Image 1 (spheres, helix red, strand yellow):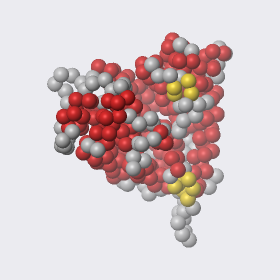
Image 2: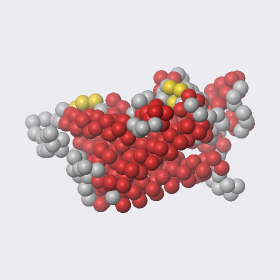
Image 3: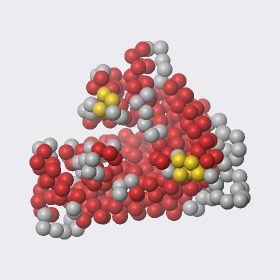
Image 4: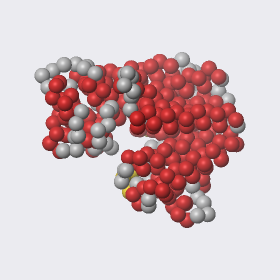
Length: 346
């Protein structure tokens, strides 16, 4: 395979479309495609077992698809070292198995009926089957981790602890004297940012990248993960249709306080309808008329501009860190991701 980072002469590198439709170096895109195929193959092998129900339930979300965002970050980060290193593909599978396991558990806690356009596992079978399937995926991830060395095990264990802590903190809410927005951002960092950070960390570490590169990629990827969640918060309010993949106002209807609503309740911005909007945000919005009123007022509120500014800051902080890394196509792909996370919210 040609070296995607070799010196190029005679004009710019040929570009192809990569993750999220972003332009990437053609050689990098080809390498990522081949390695993603290897990830997919190993992922399917990991969820096959002797028990028919366990196999079917485990394959349920794997076969439903998904962006494979975390495995892609592992693969991109591996180009700061040797992308063909033997631990890279298994590490990509580890982070995806972990992510999928959390989805099974999340759907039980949220009493969800749909996941990735299909009936959720807890709805199709039972909560017990869904929980045990998630546990099984965590076990399969641990099995792969054992071959990647004690440092990889330690990194994954600490990330998993953060995932659980974030879920618990989200469940119990901020303490009486806590800043609700600070609490929310910590939950986002733990629940979303932690595993995305590990994705970049695994890719760089297991490919043999220098320690300072590993640290930089890890930090930048966590910021990208936080930015992605904040952009989802904005899309939940701002999107007019379901074209974005989200039903507008879902978080509002479910009573979930996200970045824009935290800013409203904290008094960001002002206007004649502030009192009414704050009143709506503290009550049940399952009623269609109240939900529509709250969504309309929130879309026009200065808190949305503040949320977009917060999003840009997280994405730009990630970009600033990435620009200290060696100038290779993988760095460009990652900085393009920083652009995407901003532009996807319009």
